[in-house]
Length: 433
Ligand SMILES: *[C@@H]1O[C@H](CO)[C@@H](O)[C@H](O)[C@H]1NC(C)=O
Ligand SMILES: *[C@@H]1O[C@H](CO)[C@@H](O)[C@H](O)[C@H]1NC(C)=O
Ligand SMILES: *[C@@H]1O[C@H](CO)[C@@H](O)[C@H](O)[C@H]1NC(C)=O
Ligand SMILES: *[C@@H]1O[C@H](CO)[C@@H](O)[C@H](O)[C@H]1NC(C)=O
Ligand SMILES: *[C@@H]1O[C@H](CO)[C@@H](O)[C@H](O)[C@H]1NC(C)=O
Ligand SMILES: *[C@@H]1O[C@H](CO)[C@@H](O)[C@H](O)[C@H]1NC(C)=O
Ligand SMILES: *[C@@H]1O[C@H](CO)[C@@H](O)[C@H](O)[C@H]1NC(C)=O
Ligand SMILES: *[C@@H]1O[C@H](CO)[C@@H](O)[C@H](O)[C@H]1NC(C)=O
Ligand SMILES: *[C@@H]1O[C@H](CO)[C@@H](O)[C@H](O)[C@H]1NC(C)=O
Ligand SMILES: *[C@@H]1O[C@H](CO)[C@@H](O)[C@H](O)[C@H]1NC(C)=O
Ligand SMILES: *[C@@H]1O[C@H](CO)[C@@H](O)[C@H](O)[C@H]1NC(C)=O
Ligand SMILES: *[C@@H]1O[C@H](CO)[C@@H](O)[C@H](O)[C@H]1NC(C)=O
Image 1: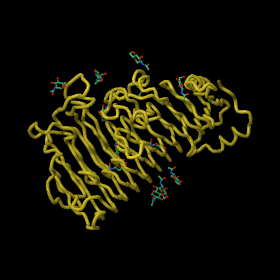
Image 2 (image 1 turned 90 degrees about the vertical axis):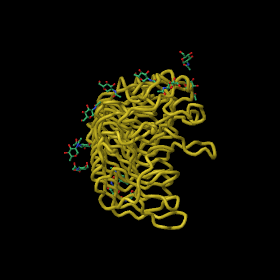
Image 3 (image 1 turned 45 degrees about the horizontal axis):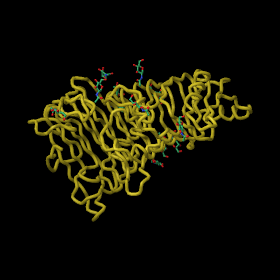
């Protein structure tokens, strides 16, 4: 059911708030939630049919029942989310219908594509994945359970902005950004906590994962999750992250990458500045699979290849800058705030596997990092580079981190195959894990 807004004043106010140079539009659709509480997706698709080119689509101040997958493409459209889109809790239905995204056999429930789109929530609009049912399901105990979906995939989205949206309890990764370019993602709040007391923050609920995408800017993000806050994977280039706060996450992950044997993948030109990390395992870290494929899939077809095993990828990681970080109680478990591994998930019983990657890592800088680290005696950095291609241009400057337990200053750096470290001295070798 679609209705036109009754007042001209409403449309005028919306136009005045446009941040981008979207032209005036006469084509405005209000999406209605069916009164009987059933699936709102048919109404959403009808609105997109009518207003999905040069139009405006408004989700009103209500809760929409989202019970079907969507694959949509908008052109020159403003999408205004004033209420909540809530995904239904029928796990079997989603496992049966989720849409493949084309990497690691992952899937999603909404492929949101378009050009010149402004999707905004004004700090109020919310996407609620009903993840609690997923966190309580047996599925949560398995990595990348087949067809456990991402909450949304920005796929083939170009020259667009996503602003002021809240994401709550995503089913798996909150958003994947794939084959997309020239995006600003500003003022996004993600909270993927388990609502059961004592159950913490579920894994595999990343804030955002980028693949085959170029020129993305993330600003003013707050992420609460038990996994990576933002992860730049295969062919992520020219990414900027600024003014963000992360809680309980694994921080900023560059990778994993090189999981697909003989595929050429890169990560290049990533900058992150003014990021605060509370209770994170790490701050910013790099992970490549080894040069020799190893491991085994959990569900078959069995073998040392994706989704759950692999390695042997080609390519490089180059030019990453991490500056002005504040860390608080970081470094949970075995992790150091900064790290590199080039044998992610490798079968370390294979001789020299951690020296087999040919994915060269170069020009990575961590600068101006202050705060506290859990565990006295922990090292600040752990850099395990491949013997085949030692890391070059690894730079660490102006780091002042102290132990939360006794205030002692941490200064250790473990290194393997780090060529000419800049600004720091290696104090030991990594344990290769
Ligand atoms: C959402 O819609 C589906 C499909 O119509 C229905 O089975 C489900 O009960 C609805 N959920 C709510 C909370 O009403
Ligand atoms: C999922 O698919 C299976 C196999 O086709 C079918 O038996 C089951 O009813 C479906 N479940 C739902 C909720 O659609
Ligand atoms: C992953 O996807 C590939 C290609 O579509 C398929 O051949 C393979 O069976 C899938 N593996 C799993 C574990 O789903
Ligand atoms: C994007 O467009 C390409 C080419 O049309 C298509 O193959 C792909 O499936 C689309 N979706 C995503 C998520 O990339
Ligand atoms: C990068 O994307 C922004 C939009 O976020 C755009 O303004 C800018 O022109 C793009 N840069 C290039 C080089 O295309
Ligand atoms: C981030 O938020 C601040 C404070 O609200 C605002 O001034 C700034 O413009 C935002 N950044 C972007 C890129 O919109
Ligand atoms: C750093 O980011 C926070 C938001 O996380 C913001 O409030 C603060 O003004 C920023 N400071 C600088 C110096 O950019
Ligand atoms: C980050 O925050 C600072 C301080 O509030 C502000 O000056 C700067 O413009 C912000 N950066 C972005 C990209 O929004
Ligand atoms: C990834 O980027 C590299 C370097 O630009 C390119 O050679 C490769 O084809 C890209 N891979 C895909 C799947 O787009
Ligand atoms: C590294 O990336 C930054 C940010 O994208 C860019 O300004 C700089 O020119 C790059 N450096 C090199 C050597 O490419
Ligand atoms: C990285 O930035 C440099 C400097 O701006 C630029 O020359 C290079 O093309 C960029 N790399 C990619 C993959 O966009
Ligand atoms: C992979 O796991 C399957 C199922 O457990 C097993 O049959 C197979 O031998 C394993 N392959 C390797 C190389 O470990």
